[in-house]
Length: 191
Image (cartoon, rainbow, N blue to C red; front, side, top):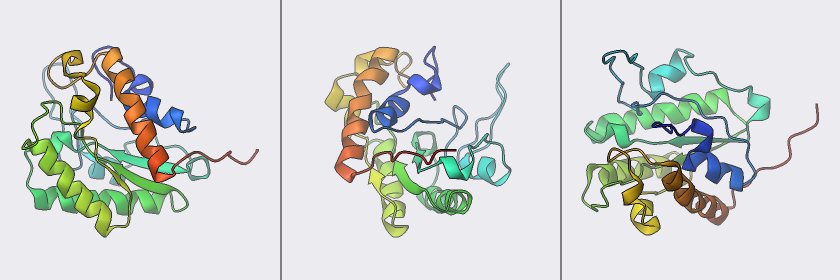
């Protein structure tokens, strides 16, 4: 999700997917993860994690015949959760997505490391997700170095969320990673 005035379809993920020819549909709730729920706070509603949302049909998912690629993105909000819980939830998310979209390719995109610290919990979370992806035969894209590589730490509004300029600077990294994996959109059948 974009946050701070950046719409979901203008995030680095959406822009990167468009560069590979996809028409992204972004579903999810800010502040959630594979394990992490977003609690209600003040005037903000709470939202359940990815697995609960998939199980309970809380996402407005597109029909299966229009989906070529499902990107499970994130995990940064899970950084303080135990690795075993993240691993189990990521496996379940993959299972649920494969059940919903049996013909689509599934890809995991790890969290950004906004702090740039190679010892950060987000880097450890990415390693957990990469191991799950390998075990589940799902391509994994490690994005933990991209904030430093793109030099966009100064584009963080609050230490976590990017300005539009930051999103736009990060998008080519995803486009390049998709290209390196040979992931690109195919024309959908007419009708």
